[in-house]
Image (cartoon, rainbow, N blue to C red; front, side, top):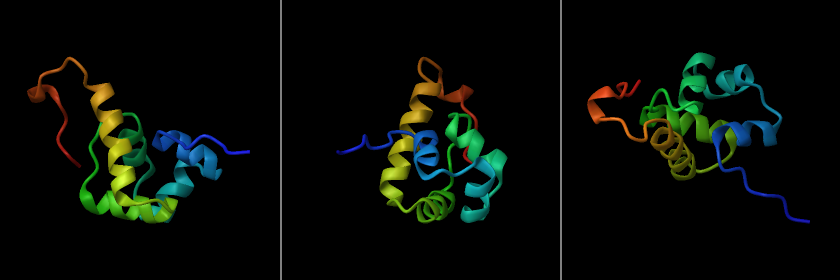
Length: 87
C-alpha cells in the first residue's frame, strides 16, 4: 500500500514523527523560525532550506517548493510591500 506524499512541511514533520523542537535541533535552527516558515510568516534563507532539507531527508528543491507554496497561500491577495523580509 502506498501512502500519500507529504505536501507541506507540517505534514512531513508529522510523517517523520518529529516535533518542532526536535526538527530545529536537527537543522541547527530555532523552533520559532521553523514555525514561522511552516505558517508562511517567514521565507527561509537558502542555508536554512539546505539544513532543514538534510535534517528531514528530502531535497532542498522539494523543501523550497513546499515553503514557496505555504508562503503564497499565506500572502494571497497582499501587496509585496506588506510581506515580511526573508530571515
